[in-house]
Image (cartoon, rainbow, N blue to C red):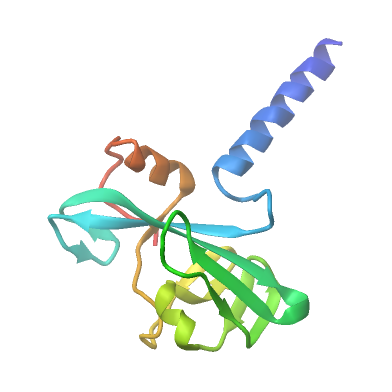
Length: 148
C-alpha cells in the first residue's frame, strides 16, 4: 500500500514536471516562449537590460498533409500555415518559406527547438523554457539570459 502511494506520487510529480517543461503537450503542439530585452541590447543570448516575457508562438505539424500550422497565442494577428514541409513529427520539421512566414519565428523545428531563420523570412527571437517565461510574466526576475 505504501509503495503504491509513493509510486503514484512520483508519477504525478514526473507528469507535472513534463507538462511544466513543455516536453509533453496535451494537444501535440509545440509552443516557443520568447523574451525581449527591455531597456537594453542582446549580446547573443545575454540581455544587458531587463529580461521580460514576450510572445508565445505555437506550432502544430500535420505529417499526413506536409503542413505546419502556427499562431501567436493571445494575439490579434492571423494564424498562418506552411504547406511545403518535411515533417518527421511535431518536434522535427522543416518548411519552405511563404508569405505567412513573416507572422512567425521559424521555418524549422529540431528536437522541439525553433531554429533561427537566417534567410530573413521569419522574425528573429530569443526563447526561454516555459517555467521561466511564466515567472517573467508574473514579474519575477530570473536572470538576464535566454536559452536560445
